[in-house]
Image (cartoon, rainbow, N blue to C red):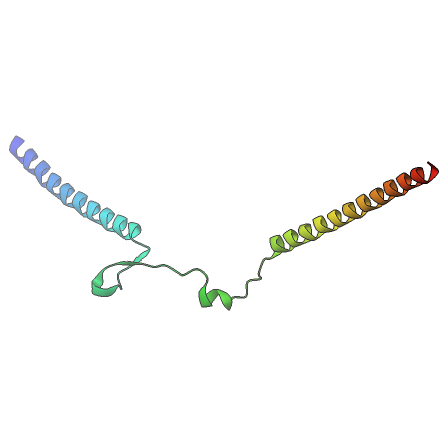
Length: 111
């Protein structure tokens, strides 16, 4: 009686081992497909190639995407504003110098 139980158990173990191996094979297949999902096997000589897309180029020139030049415009506006402020400051300094010269000439005339 004991021999029959061990034989039945052995058969079940073999079936379980086969099922486990099949499951492991399916897992390995899924994992390899997932890991290499970005590669194409259509390269020359069957060697997998990673798909990449060029930056810039003709595809981007024809795109409908609006060109974002806000930073460029802000820099230009700031530069113009600073130049205007410098000009005003220089004019004010000229007026002050001329006023000082006129004051000194007035003092010299009184002497």
